[in-house]
Image (cartoon, rainbow, N blue to C red; front, top):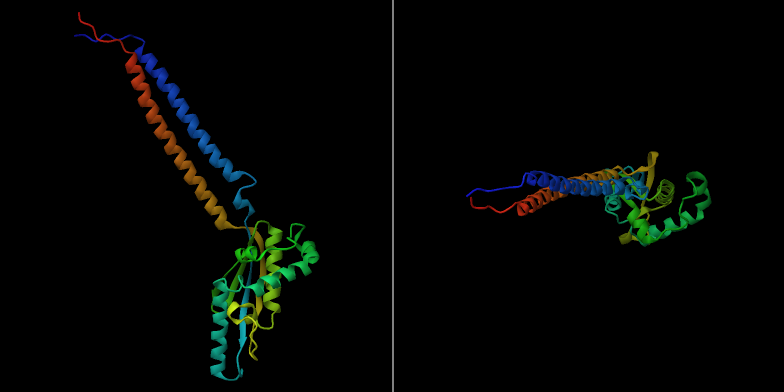
Length: 247
């Protein structure tokens, strides 16, 4: 038995394979280009994530300043308030949110002149709680405000620092202690200068990681498409081959 094939079979197979490989390549490029567009477009979320920060120190006055035990209690009180600020208790309290809103409204024209026209006129309690975060180290707290624009981040942080440093007793801003009356005091004082709002590096890193993931997935998708289309090309070419004939 002798297998007879057309001399054009190889050419047809190569042409069909090239056509399908081209389709796979185009699909890969389209997916990768879509991922790149999502990253660089002006509306990309990482382009609208600004963070402004300010360090404050918590100072508590308990009893006599000359008593070592009272000094110990004051340190514990300050450290405890710093921890509560870091876990978000202050920023989610009604007292803090209301005071921030009132301060923002009262200072709006001044804040606009300092930071720009994008300063929000008012913010909701949920937005305030989501915007602020803190990290503590002893009685020192790094307060951060994350907002969609630099002006808003700077203005909200400014209002928050005014609230924290202007309070006679920070414990009135803390939910478990709201309305407490005590001769002791706990206040905040700024340490160093404000770090003006800049793009959130963590959001940018996450966006870059997402771009890398999408690019890798598009490459894998393209490779899988190439393998599938190559197999289809082979089967298509084989189906067109003439059948074997007897001599």
